Structures are given as structure tokens and as C-alpha cells.
Length: 319
Length: 101
Ligand code: SF4
Ligand code: SF4
Image (cartoon, rainbow over all chains, first blue to last red; front, side):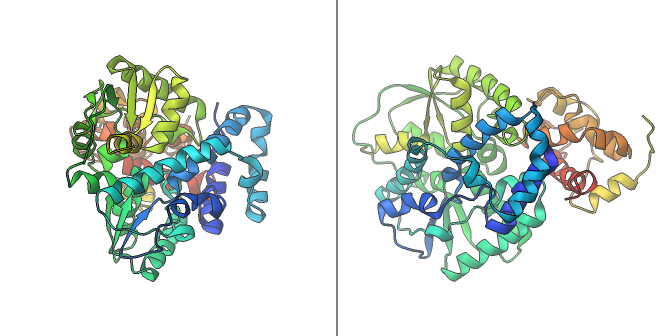
């Protein structure tokens, strides 16, 4: 079961070029986490979401549609969909995630911001100017659309005089830290994930957490950005007993997420294999990428407990 | 299927971005570790480009986009081939050649 590749890449690239995101979502949705916390606008250091976490409930809603469309005669309408989508964004018409899912993923950003504040890090947020980096379009080889987006983001960061960006998910980290400087040699912003920032100082844990967990490394953190040791150093301070699964660290196995936009059925099969590996290590697992979380959770269907590392660290540092 | 063997394909792909499989020893470790379990990924695909088998590469469009870019093959490759960069460049080529993007 696959979707028509060309039209799907076309729609994603058109959206990025015309609307600044592969799946344009309303600003009130993408900014609600920062508004909840009343974060200052801009500043030399910003917590940058790249809208990746906020996109997950929309991706989930789209995948549900894709799984129904893939292999069906309706999939043949994708070229028409691309022509329509150029005139009016089809995303809000198609993907309506439940409010519960939106709140759950916003919670990751709220937890990350809370952890940074507790660690004494001063930062602001860019609200509606916190733009999607184009990670998915980059993976699909739509480099021209990504270059346009990189320049847009560079202008935003210059306008707010940002010198340091703290990222949340591995994909945004990779785009800003590694891909953008290749596209724009004068992209001079320091980029670190919040896990790297937090791991630099001791974690204040009032009461150790009980229990056993296993840890799923995200491919992009482990193999593209060498973020392997930091989550372990942080978790070691929480009191939890963390057991390594069969494939861990640099040799982690993929959650299948990157195949989601074009090969949803295959993505699920790979996620199923990974869930089985994790379950052999422990009944509950910790993830560090929102795409891994959603993909593994769908495949696990309740058979493996899954929680983002930000929620674990927040609980450990006082709830 | 007829196939024209030559360096033109690798050159055409290489004009769009980094594509280098010259160091590949054809050992097959990458294919053995690949979670997708598709025979084309990634050794045979890279070979087809190096050998200039354009029709075969075009026929393998679906496997090219099925790659997760997870890099498990790359960290296992004894020759240090930048496999995921090769796959991404090949996607750029197919985006134009097959989909007219
Ligand atoms: S592992 Fe490396 S050297 Fe071996 S076939 Fe794959 S790309 Fe070639
Ligand atoms: S990067 Fe692609 S070819 Fe390599 S192991 Fe992952 S899915 Fe397979």
C-alpha cells in the first residue's frame, strides 16, 4: 500500500514554498505552548520548536486518511489534489486532530520549557515566527523549497538578534545545526538540543523515581547529531533503572516514521519490529523524538508503555 | 529490459548533489542490516547508478523513496560510503526525471 509519490512530494514542497510548512497549521495552535507559559518574545537565546511537535497530531490525522487512500482508487486523485492545493491549502480541510492529541503534544514543549527554566536557562520564544524547518521536504529531496525556507528562517533569527537556538526534536536540531549551514554558509547561530543543554548541569531531583524503563534512541539524534550520552546521563539522575534494548545508541533501529508520508503500512511494520525489541528489554520505554513516540505508540497499541523523555525528566525534577 | 551502460547517469546524478559510491566494495553489509528488507536498498541501487543502468534505477523509484534515511547501513559500511547522501541525491534526480518536479 503506497501513495502516489510524485504528487505527494509536490504537495509537501508546494506547501513549504507557498505557506512555510509541509502541513500548514493555524498559528493559534502552533503557539499555544508559548502563550500558556507567557514566554518573552525573542532574545539572544530562544527555545525553537520548528513546529515539529505541534505537527504530530496533524500528521497522525493525515496518516489515518492516507491509510484509507493508499491502494484505493481515490489515491489516483492525488495529482488533482496537488493542483487544488496550490490555490487553497487542503490541510485544514482534511486533517482535524482531536483536541486531546493537540494538548498532549503541546505538553512536551511546556515540559521542555519548564525543565530549562528549572535549570536556570534564560530563553524566549518566537511564537508565530517559529517556523517549520522543512525536514520532511529535505528528506524527500525537495532541496529548492528547503533553501527558500532556510533563508526565511535566517531572516527571522537575524530580525530577533538570536545568537543561540535550543531545539526540542532531533529533526529540527539536524536541519538547523547541520543542513542550514551547508545551504547558507553565513548561518551563524549556535544550535543545541535541550537534552544537551540540560546535561551540562546536575539535574535537581527531590525524590528518585521508582521503576524500570528501556530507552529508544532516535536515529537522527544518535547517527546524525551524536546525541547518545546526554539522555543517558540525565536519566541516570532520575532514580529510574534504565535498561538498554537490543539495538541501542549509534546502532538503534528506526521507528519507521520517515516512511510514514509515502509508505504508511510499511512504516507500521517497522515500528512493530522495534516495539517487540523494546518490550523484550522492559514493559515501558522512553522516547526522545515526537515522531518516534507517535509511530511506536500506534504500533504498540497499548502493549508497550511509551513516554517522552521530557515528561520523565519533569516528573523527576518535581512534577 | 535493455540497459545502456555508461558513466553519464552517475554524472547526471552527481550534478544535483553529492553522489559517491566509488569506494563501495559491493560487500552487501548495508543491505543485510537495512530494516526495509527491500533487495534494491541500498547496495544494488548504488551499483545500478555507478553502472549507468538508468532504466533500472527509474524502475526502482519506489525503493528509493522507501529508504528511511536511518543511516544504519552507513554506520555499518566498512568503506565509509555516504549512503544516505547518495539516496537523497538520487531522489533529487528522480523528482525531476520521473515526476517533473
Ligand atoms: S556496506 Fe558499504 S561497501 Fe558494502 S555494499 Fe554497502 S555501500 Fe558497498
Ligand atoms: S538508510 Fe535507507 S538503505 Fe540504509 S539502512 Fe536505513 S532504510 Fe536501509
